[in-house]
Image: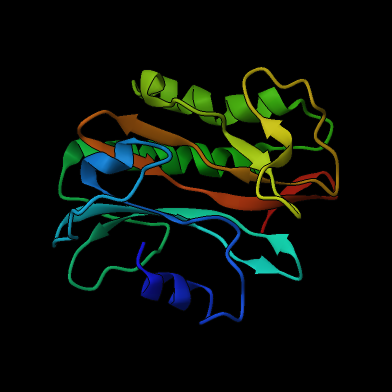
Length: 191
């Protein structure tokens, strides 16, 4: 990411970054922790951006995957020209929304993970979901609870964590949609 892009993201120094942002195009987006390349964004490319700012020492974290057309926006609803990419995108969005709608305090973190992973697997992309569903966010960018297949952590009111399902098809494309939620009155509230 260029110095100018980092400056704009942090409101020219008003806010510190939570972490070095990830900006990935097309096949590079198939790497969950993509490193920069010399690829230049072109019309109709797939663009994945994962970034966050700090506010009063607290971190934020969000990822959007977009279709880069002439007037693209980082809206959660996207339309891609490729049917395969669109199916993968719609699957990730469905998994993301399902976990936010159904996560409850008292649930084990692995159950929250299953709320995304089951949808991705049923759609035929299970082998391409290569990371956990989320992580806590606070003064550090990665904190407890870890929302993974192995976590027995009980989700409680007051916890703040990410929901970030993804599909990563090597040498083709990657899609991740990430938002932070807070557990309030037993339910996940989108931040």
